[in-house]
Length: 450
Ligand SMILES: O=C[C@H](O)[C@H](O)COP(=O)(O)O
Ligand SMILES: C=C(OP(=O)(O)O)C(=O)O
Image 1: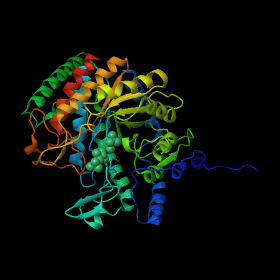
Image 2: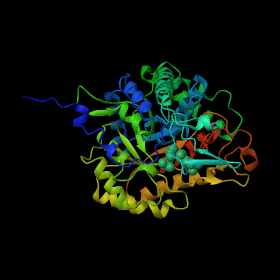
Image 3: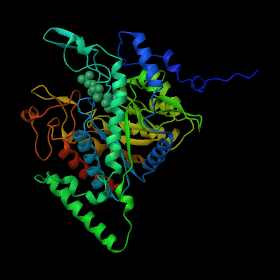
Image 4: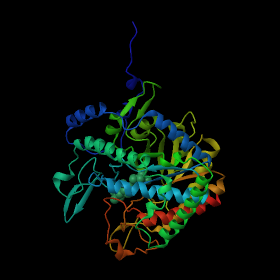
């Protein structure tokens, strides 16, 4: 008698439940979580396997130095800001940065949002205390509310369903923008409209004028520009809430492989990358392209073991290491890691996150970062890879398309007093639209030198 084994069980997708999972909310009602998980297991996927294969190829190209990954978006997306304006502003910022990079370095740019799913956050502390009152920390809109009240801070599984719905709606806007004409390269001037008063925008305008001229020249030569109408755009988030990620995982009837349909690219954070932990186990079993954040305490052995565990077959583009060392540490901390993985491991796409190792508290008490530190870490990243003969394959940044004042510096010289003007993030500080463009111009120069 033949026995049919459920493909999800055969793939060991629930093995992570036997392991330690860091940074999980304490859900007050296990039955409620169970019923939400069942509902999520039946919803349509947000992404499909063919897109994941394409992205794996793109990331492999970035790993070989034939493309460059630009991954950006909010630290913590919120449900309230999942509206057309905010999504459009972020997509536009990424498109503008990509234009600057492509133009400056003649390099295809793989465009990816930290978007449509970035609703859960790891925290340094489980609690937050204000004026003698202690409540559970805010862990992202997919877990609890940001308001400092007892009710809001209780983790609520219904938020997982809301997160799915809002991810779907966000993805819908992203698709409409990237395939419906807004992202057409012939709109390169239009994206800058209303932003013309500072040096980064003026510089962007000159780049746009050159691109425009080149397009008009090619059009006059009879070139077909239909391909410029749409852009390939992927979405990503931290795979933190394993109950959600597991419920969104489907086994493809075509390939027989499990894929997590919650986003194209998923990463594990610095706080949950333990080799014997639940997150590494779960990500080792899905076939999406995946990333791991590596902080300054990572050893070469840690990185090598992760590479062996998460990409045992050495598939190019499957694994991205996103290093986030801090500007003052990267030049010492990164070389031994790159050396070990390059000498003894399989293919890896190396990406820099110059945000998370450079967080400081300003004198007035804001959690912030200095743009100069952020840029210095990117510079260090390029220097280390040049020294090691490896490839700096991409940039991962926390940014917004709006004129917030959360990061110090830039040509508008945001200082400590200026932070108060428009400090809106619920967790970590993001580059604003103009700082993002400034960064793109500097990174384009580094890429050109590469
Ligand atoms: O985005 C990264 C982390 O979630 C964040 O830095 C944690 O912030 P905390 O130290 O305020 O908890
Ligand atoms: C938490 C994050 O980063 P890290 O894991 O690098 O601290 C993040 O990118 O939101």
